[in-house]
Length: 241
Image (cartoon, rainbow, N blue to C red; front, side, top):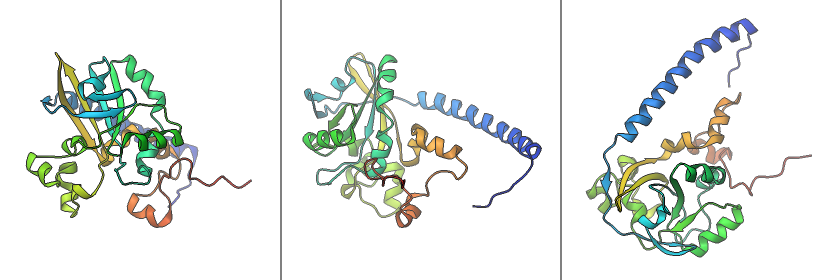
């Protein structure tokens, strides 16, 4: 990392220039949010059934009396020993948001393909309170990680074909994504899904690290060798002293 040392006057001039770029990014972000809301709704006719702590529920029942539903596709497969560290890093931030979302007519749940008892044991380990349901035995996670119906059947469509170009078949991996649904006159519609770095803005730690002098962790491909990638919060070593 190259560091440039300057005067307070130089810093202020540079900061004012940066402020204009920040304001432009905020305006563009507001416009993107508007465009996101204007996407067409797609009717969901499949009656997915999820294992929950309150018994089996359909997708419509996951709304829990509200009109909007956000589902985080948390990477935890039926044969995995633990949930994805990156997904766990993200979910660590969510418990405090649930009450605020609920108050704004939004229900939030995590969904994973591992069986419910496995999810609940991990949830207890992590100390999470948020709702977590099992989509085990359903095609729910695959269906909303695909780009086209042909890709969905082939298992190659996640994130608009990115894994397919990388030679990854979805039948062999778990998916990380966030999907939005709305319930209107008893009908569920899918409105939006984002993948990979599309969820960056939802993670407060990334934002805080971007404000820190040395920035965020390295990219996953670089971090694997250096160990500079988020761990599950109970796996960090205690600081010396």
